[in-house]
Image 1 (cartoon, rainbow, N blue to C red):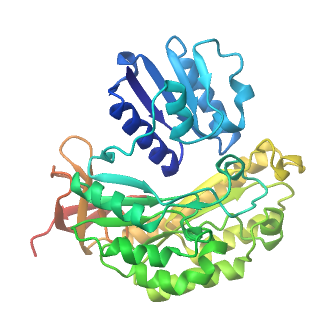
Image 2 (image 1 turned 135 degrees about the horizontal axis):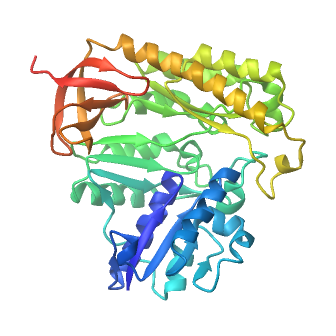
Image 3 (image 1 turned 90 degrees about the vertical axis):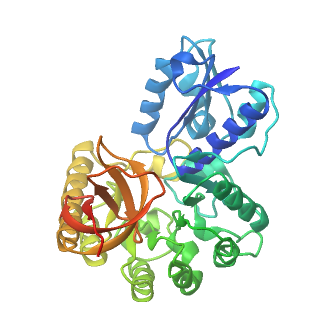
Length: 407
């Protein structure tokens, strides 16, 4: 059995694909590097927007001359979209590795952690405590199930043992970790950070409503030298009226207070956030509040999504806005975000930074991250996992250019 696995979407899907890979290898199968070499193609799908779902269908059509297993969120939430794909296409009814391994006739296996280059993705929880009115993922992933701390620590140790230098801790909402067990994220992180090694840890997305009561302890976590000073906290809208329609239980002012605490407590922390533009009934005034929020809180990494109705969600029943309005608002927000990031990147020229080489760049170059998780392009080749000092000599909208610095 030779299997090719194609993964789309979030790091939770990356973790699920890792579990599929482990089970296939433990059963004596092999993982194909290219789909042309495979007997079976697994497509681990995403369904976060309508546009994403259409792209998933294109991916399935590419391989339907082979046996194809469609897994992940789209397969679970929208199986009807795959009904006319033919007899070679098989759809599993729930996300994760278990339905796929059952279809293949093999048992799940812990196996070797998947380390891509020098980076390992480790899932700390599945499911969500949120009730966002637009979200299809919560319908698919179900209620929160936190991984026991001992198991997370074991996975971190295993990944480091296989050469990882960068660990991504992921979940649908890392801030919600332990709300089902009583052991919250800061307590988990104390155990994880006790693991010895020369590595960096990146915490995945945390919702404002799950992080609000632990933000003081999170400040201590982000100040640990092993943790990237990078917090992904999505606001989605700067309008309290829209946040209420989204069923996001916080206000823009409460979100701003969380960001202020993080910035005051963690020097130079990078803030990442998400926005949904064109949510049903969003007015020009609502949108202007989102623009004001971006200009005030000045996040350096931003994901902007045009609202699209997802089947089975309350927001799908609301009156939508024309596509042209969503497109124009997305454009305006993107331009403002680029103004914010460009200014920061330009101001960074001349800084001296310590970086970790995390990936290859174009021929003759390498990609690295500094302690704030900024992307640094180095115009020289270095082995993955290398640590070095650089001086920033150039910048674009989304990354900096660093020359090796011996001083």
